[in-house]
Length: 275
Image (cartoon, rainbow, N blue to C red; front, side, top):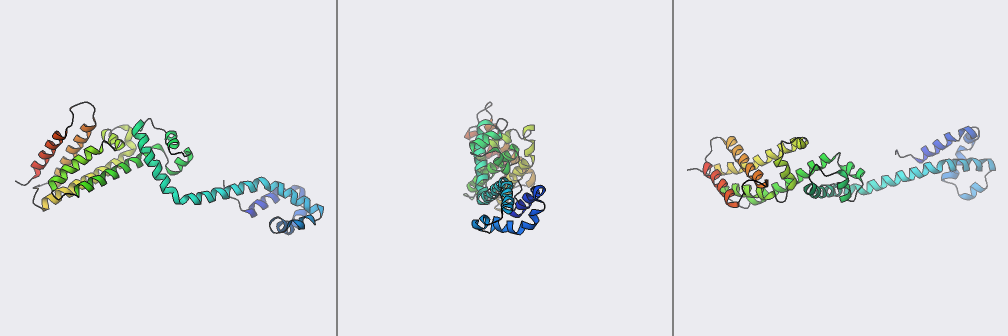
């Protein structure tokens, strides 16, 4: 509701009452304004009865409108008070939604589920996110950010580029245990269900490939790796590791043991190591 100023409220009331008091209101307008907003009560008592009737009528007409105006002011004040916590509310929605999506899946989760879990009205959720798709997109971005930070922390803790590739692979595969939503997208990225995530998926690929590229370039500079076509090799390693990620999530098929992961990583490193 658009907030009304007191002057607008009074003007509206005067217009409404103009039918009955069209001749008297203009003559008494200054006096009415003084009494309603500035004058003490005893001034009202000393007024002629005709002026009292005008003021009484305006007071009754204004009552509901002033209530709405006061409520509008309250909402405005409350919104200003909550402005500083908007980021916290948004983060809480995303973090809580992570758990709900992981438990029920994207398709079965509803906006009501999310609203109930964060103890907010559904309208409040829509204030921060346009749809369930937008919330899920924020969840995927958050989980990838967390995974990427974990990868960078692990590979930056060692100096050898061969070791970095191994830690990159292991950290990504182990991430599937915690980042359920992200890996559900990795498994089903070509599904129509996740068409709205196309841009996010492409961005994730670019950032993952960039991390791998940095490791490979570091290995070339230190003389550990010998590669003619960096782009081709980086893409090949990326999709090989992606295959391991997908296999680690499948309930059927062969069990992906740490030994098998080690063997794949050794093959990768052997293929690019300078002889």
